Structure formats: structure tokens, C-alpha cells
Amino acid sequence: MTLRVLVADDEMLARRRLVRLLAALEGIEVVAECASGEEALSRIASGGVDLALFDINMPGLSGIDAKALLGEGGPHVIFATAHPEHAVSAFDVGASDYILKPIDAQRLSKAIERARKLLVDRAKEADAAEPADDAGAPAAPIGRLAIPTRKGVVLIDPADVTHAVLEDELVTVHTLKGAFLTDFTLQELEGRLPAGRFERVHRRALLNLERVERLEPLDTGGYVARTVTGLDVEVSRQSARRLRRRLGLARGTGDE
Image (cartoon, rainbow, N blue to C red; front, side, top):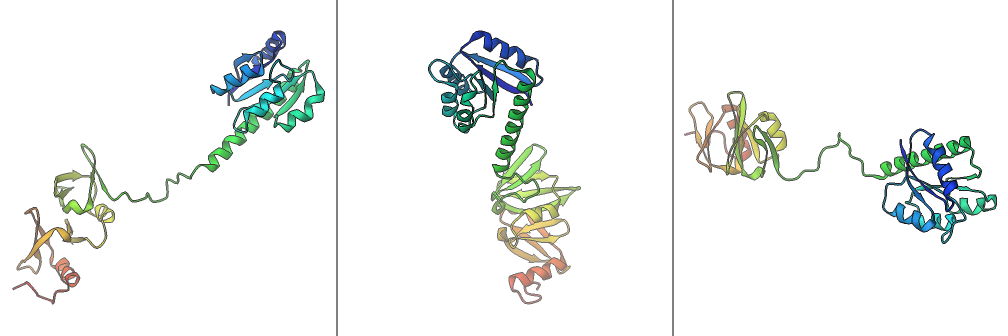
């Protein structure tokens, strides 16, 4: 993880030395050098800063004042100062660390790694707070049937589907607005369409009972279902028995 670091110190020589020490560390990018607390806050407000190193005694806003104004959502702050008496105040405003000048490279490295760990922990907490995107959970229904076709995904109101038939190894979904060839199997379609409205009437056909105008009997004991679009769907003998039970018809009704 590369840390984007801002350095704020009103003394140019102290700033430059700190920047040189930071440049010797891996995973560090110094994105700004500021000479005051106000300048640092303005730069931080524009974004792109993960960690700030503040001197404490600066003209205008002190480093501690600037840290207090950042709030909890701002970058982590390490104080780099020649004044040990401010340590308690620094930690009171939530400093990640407090290092004394002249700055020791090893001590700086330790403070940077501590801040890096805090940033990683913050990111993990933010991820944990996000709503889970569980790929294994069933998707919430949207009330539309999504049919993958060779020209893209077509979204269809299930009520508009009249029937679906398997022809030449592919399924054609017939609707009030046209027919669509899809790679779905009849079984997959049946699982996606509202239960109760659709009936598997043949091993090669699925029928929307609400889009049937009449059932005409066949000598085989099955039916021909005439749909509202004028297309016919064969109903097998076995499916016809089940269909009669669903429709509350006596055995043989309509077979004469």
C-alpha cells in the first residue's frame, strides 16, 4: 500500500529534511509540502492525502489545531516536533504518533508503519460496514423475465409470454410482442416464470394458461391449445389429464 503523505512545517530546512527521509522509505509518495496549518488543511480538503506529518508550532493554526479541525474522517497525523511537552495534547486530538526532532530515520519508519496499519484497519472496518454483496444469495425479483438472445438480453413481462417451444434444439419464447430465440432450456424458463400461470404441457412446450382461448381435443387424448395470438400448442395426453384436473373438468370433458 503506497501512502500519500503531506508534510507541514513552517521551517523550510526541516521540511526538506523530512521529505528526504520519507523518500528513502518504500511505499511513500510525498504529495504536498505546506508551510502552515491553514495551507495543510486546504490541500487535504482537495483529497489524495492518506497521512500528514505536522509540526506543532506553526504560524496561525498550530499542528494540534489543524489536527483537531480534520475530524475523524481525515488522514492520520504524525506530529514531528522539537517540543516534547505537547505530546499529551497531540494524542488527545487523535495523533497516530509523536516523534521528536532531530528526526531519527528508524523512528520515522516505525511511525509510518504504525500509521499504515491504522489505515489498513480503517479500510477493513469500512468494508465490513458496507452491505454484503453475496454472490450466492438469490437476486431480488424485478418482475421481468430476462431472456439471453443472440442479439442481447431481452426483458419481458412474464404476462406477455404466451408459450415457449423447443424446436431444432433451441427454445423459442413466443410473446404478445413477438418471438425470441434463446439458449434457455424449457426447464430453466419454467423455473423463472410464475408458478401456477404456466404449465409444462409437452416435453417440448410450456404454456401460459392465461393466454389460451380454447382447448381442442385430439384423438390421442391430448389437446391443441389455441393461444390469443392465433398460434397452436400441442398438449400431450398425460399433460391433458393434469390440465383437466387443474381446470376442474370431469374426465373426458371436451373430448367428444
